[in-house]
Amino acid sequence: MGPYTHDETADPELAHHPEVVLLPENTQQVAEIVKLANHHKLPIVPRGAGTGLSGGIVPKFGGIVISLERFDKIIEIDSENMFMTVEAGVITERVQEAANRAGFLYAGDPCSGHSSTIGGNVATNAGGNKVLKYGSTRRQVYGLEVVTAEGDIVFLGGKCMKDSTGYSLLNLIIGSEGTLGIITKVILKLQPLPSHRVDLLAIFPDRSSAMQAVPLILQKGIIPAALEFMDNRAVQCCEEYIGEKLPYRKDAYYLIVTLEGDDEGFLEGQMALIDEVCRDSGVIEILAADPRRIWRARRVFAEASRARSPVYSGEDLVVPLSALGVIIKFIVDRGEEYGVTIHCAGHAGDGNVHAHILKDSINDDNWRQILLALHDQIYKKVYSLGGKLSGEHGIGYKRVKLLEEFCHPVELKMMKAIKQCLDPNLILNPGKVLQF
Ligand SMILES: Cc1cc2nc3c(=O)[nH]c(=O)nc-3n(C[C@H](O)[C@H](O)[C@H](O)COP(=O)(O)OP(=O)(O)OC[C@H]3O[C@@H](n4cnc5c(N)ncnc54)[C@H](O)[C@@H]3O)c2cc1C
Image (cartoon, rainbow, N blue to C red; front, side, top):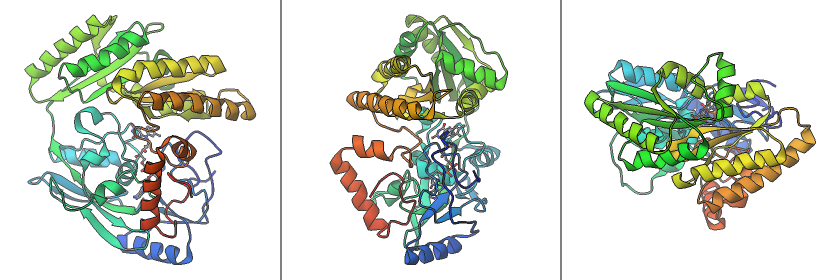
């Protein structure tokens, strides 16, 4: 498989060759390519770094991949107005580091930040490890430069902190996964850089006590930057992958809590409250964690699962907080019923579960059947609990059929009408998000 045929979705069936890969270096060139493609009705797939987990950059219908990798300039940091302007292909970690050097925080923080691009983050409305406190990528964006499906260049949003000027086309493009426009520049919100940080690792005897603690922490008025969970299998798998031992107990369930702020005394007060809530929920142990070790383990979850089973299905479902324990138990029980290993970790504070269903040595035909049956049961349950298909990875190609099945028909009709209006020849990332 060539590098432009697939993303990080661990499924070889989600790969396809484009006819051509183009690496434009300015917006005008992108616009000219799109005009030509639109005239000849050729498919275009915008590509960031290819770290997506839903097959969003797979050129399923061939055509042109437009890689934004040459759009790698940090254009401006405006300290007075607290925003920065960057090209879409800048790696997320470079954005974070540049903001830090100027004394600010850029709050977008997906686990893939060392390799994903900011344009990809905006196009998928990426989440990550600080959503609870700062919001997903959508909340970090003030403005976008976009090339439309007809090759026009437009600026959406701007440099202001609020905007009620007509429909929010800015928010329509954010999360549209390359199906409504190609993002070439991004104006990002900056915030004061917190001076203190504390990481806690809470080890619970079982799933239900850990999940009980999650809403209780938030109900105390504590807003952690991160509130993550890992089940026992996920911890073991990540430990093996990074070759480091974490504090471990058989069958235990893990919560990672990160607090950020400027007032050390206030953070200590919040730690005491978290300690109290966790003890009331039956925690075995609560430790001040080494952030490097604990976050390294949490961030490699996708790579560790792939090392264990090169093919796996990564789910990204989201449910209301009170349903978190219920849905994880349901998923794990179904795994046992079908004889497949499922690891779960994710953003507990956001109700966002990454369940990795491992193929291991199951033969291809059985795997397809098991996966279909599991998806059917899991997503019926997710929707019955008020949840949704994807919390942050998007629909891409992988979840198109599921969206068709589970999205309300009127909502789906509205989405299709928008797509047809903004991209009448359906050239932008065809086969992704919606099927026609
Ligand atoms: C180890 C690992 C950890 C991850 N952790 C997280 C996490 O914590 N949170 C999270 O949300 N995601 C996570 N992801 C998924 C992925 O990194 C994100 O979806 C990321 O935002 C994709 O960025 P990218 O630049 O790689 O985009 P790509 O994979 O290249 O593209 C993703 C989608 O965006 C579109 N796109 C890309 N650039 C543009 C552009 N300039 N204009 C228009 N459309 C564009 C593509 O067409 C495609 O549909 C993880 C992935 C891995 C492999």
